[in-house]
Image 1 (tube, helix red, strand yellow):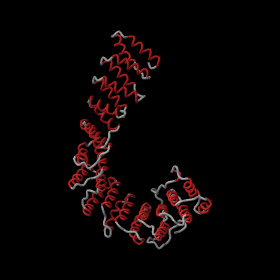
Image 2: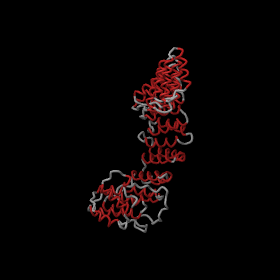
Image 3: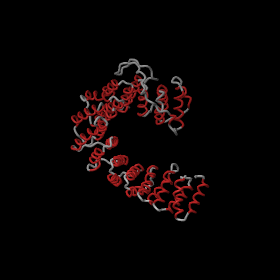
Image 4: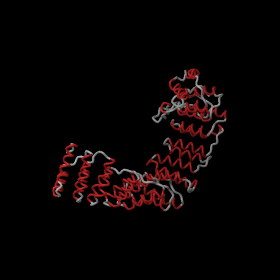
Length: 492
């Protein structure tokens, strides 16, 4: 292995010398030791030395450092030295002398990765040859090579690396193929991965994971990936057939499909077809599909997917977030009874309501004037230590007063003032006047006193209405007491 990375030149490895790649905006952001808390002092010192010393001077600086190291320390230092490839390689050589060349395979792989990610490909292959002599090469080494070439816009060389890996004693099997496909697809080159798979089939039979990787690639490409996803799906069915265990591929395929034109209709068609063969997508698709249904207020399609995957099928375990999406859809479509049933069902399926669940249902029950049902949801919510939104509380106080339910209005007001300090005046005034209009004058006076004590301003209109009633009941002294308290609080 060379002492330090240098410009490419002719070598005996299977790649022609090529000019350095042009700078790319997607060049990796390397981790820094400065971002990692609680590093061991010797690791931190070595990382600092590497980061602040030139490649020419690093070896002398290391010799003067008098730091003890273990093979694991070497791994940690290398992981945090990607931004300094020349120094990292010299540190690796220096530490090898201190460890009697007893480096771990992981340290070797890190060196290969550091060189590759910094596009010192000749030096990278020198390191690979050294690893081969030591019997340390593995698929992990070549996975690093594939990734390094692909992100450097040299996909063809990643493919050649895969094709020659047997020359280095590594098996060129479907696992290696999938590693290559994954590297290519991660870089947004799913078309290239699909094209190469047609050639690779001649010597490696793809498996379910191969197609799952391609499907994930198409999914990442958004609308542009829909046509490719359909073609790959058709090819997958021909090559490996239908397999209930192939959930990742079905999941990614349907996620790609549902985001395309007429995506929900297309997804219904394919889910129906899969169901006939006892094949189903995973929970990720259900979440994506429900998001799309919410976007278009499409409750019928959401109910179809829910019934197939959660209801009758009982294939998936939905999360609280998914229940919230269904509850939101049902509420927006006016089916608060269905939403209430969803709330009751959640716990039996291992999902537990959260503040979003309760607030959604409470909001729409109040909006629909289903006051008793709303009261039950409110009671359960508070019992479970969740706080209703302030807007929901304001709406509930008004709805309960308008509906002739002063006790429920007072319960919600109590919750409101316990949890919120601002923007209370409007609801406060409405409650006092409402209690007075419902012939609950003692409560109106009591709450007025409490509000004044909290610094909540009661309007002159509210006080005037209270005065009229109190004068009629010959209790004008109560009004005068309220006015006195108002003046002392300076809220009139």
